[in-house]
Image 1 (spheres, helix red, strand yellow):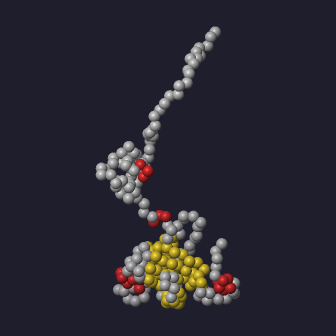
Image 2 (cartoon, helix red, strand yellow):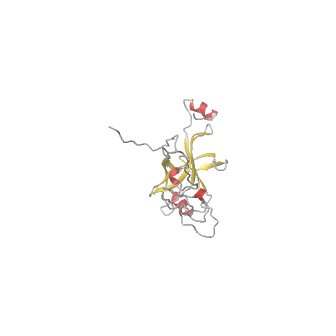
Image 3 (cartoon, one colour):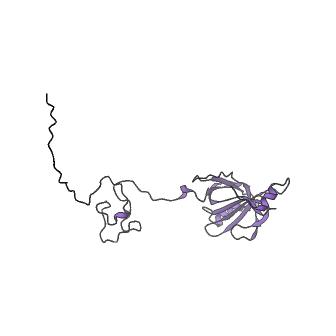
Length: 218
């Protein structure tokens, strides 16, 4: 169940009203903040909370599908790139002046008369297509598991940890042989064991043995 603001409930049930606006707040890796919308309007910023003027550069927004799993939501934001002369386009100028690759974004379907949003999406942007008249940014879910960088490791009998590193934890003077037998911190070893060593002695119980002749007599 999605909890909506009380102001949205009254506005949503009205027969007429102001159409919702698409707002896109973007903060690049250098700290620069940009405000884009599908029409010019003033709304509170998601980053500062202060009222700001949104530039009418947003031409298209993706249709987000929400899942109750780790499935990532992706889509494309399309921005206009025709204002100004051909040598200094709107978005093209900002692309040169800042780094929008990997920038953090907040998208809102904003209801101006209720001063609340119907939908709010957080994620990162990557440049998808830089055309003559439009620029397309691919929006990626902020919780996208595919964006996590994991070390390349093999499932084998050789330990995959770097000796003496933080994951290894060894403080010995001599390097190990990256095997279970030579491991200096066994509780952290990362290998596939195919043999089990016994650290206890084997004993035989002193039980009386009775020889049984199983030869069948005729």
